[in-house]
Image 1: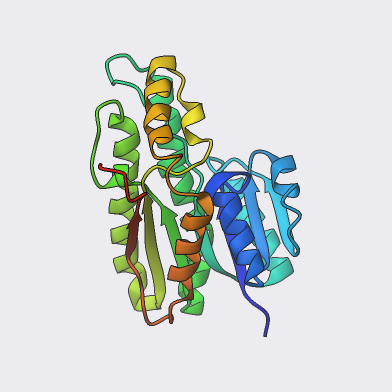
Image 2: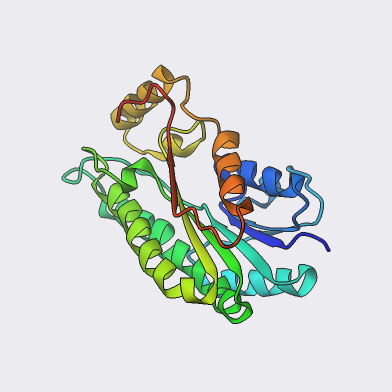
Length: 240
């Protein structure tokens, strides 16, 4: 019997791309969702359906999942990885940046859950992996809204886990510290971006995206009677 469908959001780079490689290497067909189609196609993974979908577009996410399930069979794992970090002190930040983080990090994640959870519940099997952050466990100056969105990921995950557990559906949270990805390049304030990237550089970038992807695959591979509720991981030298 072949492996089951894996849906990954934010699959064009960083943790999402690394997770796509990890699950593909384990034999899973993939639905890869991100706004940058070319970057997903450049991964050149077999049995991978790539769709240029913004996770804030609920109908587009749902349609893409249905299309992939019609091709590869039911989705057994969703990796909710799409996210954006726009750190800035709250008093100085453009509220449009707040909206963007809330829309992608919270609403986008819930759109993914909405697309797969009813089917998983009906089949009495499935795993949802929500990628959060160390910032979802503690807050830092300059990250009021980003930390707030990641705390929301934790809170929503706990509630959805409790709702889904009687239907044999697992909900897992992955909370990395600094990871060597392009995430910090999205910070619009030059000074805040430079300070954050200096902290990354002091840790040689932090964790590799592959390390985080391996943690996701490890949690998924556990017997379905086991739910690793959260993995929090960071570079050994990271002090916060």
